[in-house]
Amino acid sequence: RCPDHPVTRAIIALAGGALATPSANYSGQPSPVDAAGVLRYFDGAIAAVVDGGPCRVGVASTVVDLTRRPAVILRQGGIPEAEIRAVLTPLGY
Image (cartoon, rainbow, N blue to C red; front, side):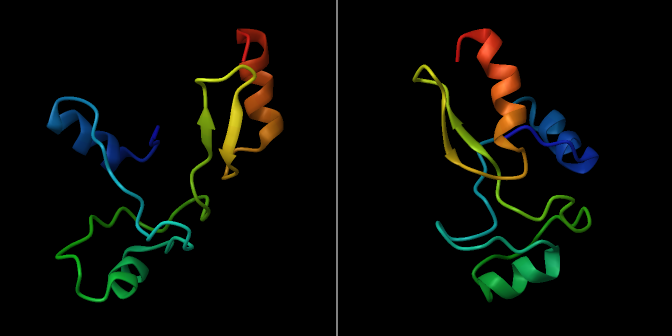
């Protein structure tokens, strides 16, 4: 993931590098778009949420497989396919 939120970037910086983190939903289920929704969704299964405000995009992350050429979009998210292709095609993906 490539977060653009300043709180998330600060947490990554404090950790000293990249973090492997899950989405705030079970696989295949829609993601909550704010901290209160995450707490409701997990219904006591998690202790806390870092609240940086509501999600700006409100949809799941776009997932792209770069191990193949051309690249394969595994999950469409907030970045339109045309924008992804415009960046990847000149790079040979």
